[in-house]
Image 1 (cartoon, rainbow, N blue to C red):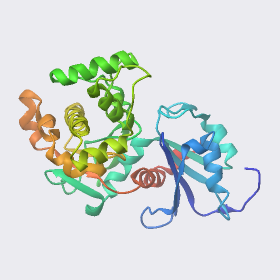
Image 2: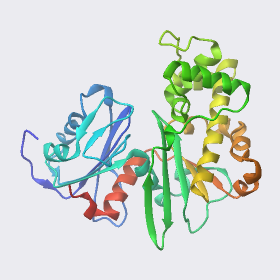
Image 3: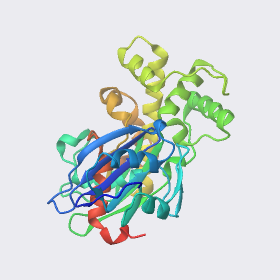
Image 4: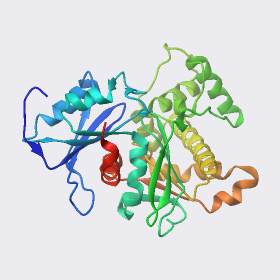
Length: 332
């Protein structure tokens, strides 16, 4: 930092996606993790994570000495390269540039997974079943946003929680039926490979729409904005938009069912910024049918409850909880 400040008793937390950089403060001595001074900054306005963080920090009278930052990428090495944003940085250099004594980096969906046990009924919408009380793992946490995040939450309130960060969104897409075979061929021609993230993301919604419209699988394809597709589908007059969103929901059901089987999940929690915008449409879609369409294990999946996160900032909350749970891991 260019200017010296007194140390703040509050911790810095951040959730950095491909589109927005969300920042907040949290009091490590409070009884529960709470978010203070939440701000969302467009990533496109900043050249790097450091510059976005400095823009937030310069408004504060005192500077935090500890931070937990969730980013949409793997964080197991010092050099971090974000998957859906052209930002890269060294963890140790970022810590030093921001004047931090401790810095903990988390995967963005790992941070969301940390928040799940702390969420109440007002923060979740039930798609199927009821939450197990007391909540216990394994819990599959996944969801579409700028990309497709996947994490695994294990443990319980008595033994303690542990989050396993994954890159499960990049698993290959497994199409079912003629329409999805067509979509898979379109995506393979456009990107060289059809992964689940390519379909289940904001950009994926636009590309599914283009594939169904007969657009060429190239950069010349005319793309509609994801928000426009969702709005048109919910309005009900645009048949292709409804077909696109219905296919998106069906594929999400398949992927959620696959995640539950892989993780041996008792619960599935869907997060991300896209799904809460069309919950009634999702409930009426083929999501549930495709979630259960796993042959001999359909009956096993019947017992898995499914919820959608409606909390406005689960990544921030989860980062704060992770920092409180393992403060000793924040040292770089």
